[in-house]
Amino acid sequence: MSLALVKFMPSETKVPFIKARMVALGLSVLFLLASLFEFSTVGINFGIDFRGGIQTEVQTEGPADVEAIRTVVNGLDLGGARIQQTGDDREVLVALPLQEGEGLEGEALQNTARVALEAALTEAFPDIEIRGTTVIGGSVSGELVVKGALAIAIALVLMLIYIWFRFEWQYSVGAIAALTHDVIVTVGLFSFTQMEFNLSTVAAILTIVGYSMNDTVVVYDRIRENLRKYKKEELSSVLNRSINDTLSRTILTSVTTLVALVALYLIGSGDLKGFAFAMIWGVLIGTYSSVFVAAPLLLFTKVKRESTD
Image (cartoon, rainbow, N blue to C red; front, side, top):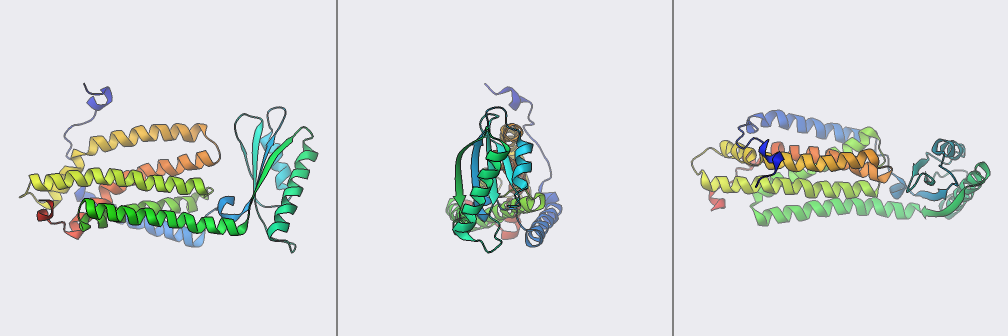
């Protein structure tokens, strides 16, 4: 018994994906250059996870006035504050990056910022309760930057090794090119939008790598199967046939994933919203790269039919 949604999906499509590979290649190069340009000129809006700062959890007796709290905190000139509600409407998280100045740095700066923040909040809102303050120092945040980048790099290398053993080296080149494409374009998007880039974003990128790789492996597996089945058919034709064979699966997986992520983005806040935003983009760009980057690259690496026997 098939699912109702599957019945509406075309079973035998003949979309000329491979014919559009040069257009897709130009679009991908444009995406990559734009992302690298944004990253090198504008940079990334790192959160306090990577810049260092303080996070204070507060709770009010009634519904919290987020804008009033934001006005008070910004009046301290301690840097760009991030104010977000957590849990119910009475709980608020105040996050401040550490801004060095007036000869203060390190622990002295952290203590000064913490005391000033807590004093301003209790003075402006007598009924407010300071539930706790977390401090992330500069050395810790710098270490997190290195570890975040290292985690992404290790994930890409392990994926390369997996594809190499699972298929052949020609497939691994295409897969890693597609994954690197996804990571760079996602980072470029965060640079362009200046959305906060934090540990949740790194987690989203690693999830994107896994999602994109899973989609690519499905396409590659069908390509290998069709290379055995259609030995006399041109490689470009086999690639196009394979992409179309897996198209319904790709669409269903992407759409159902996007439904959950869009809901998460609409009802979420703070880090959860940023995670959902990165994942939505990742699903779209990951699906695109599996079809228009990973598969067409097999024409350039000249995958051999005998390697599939």
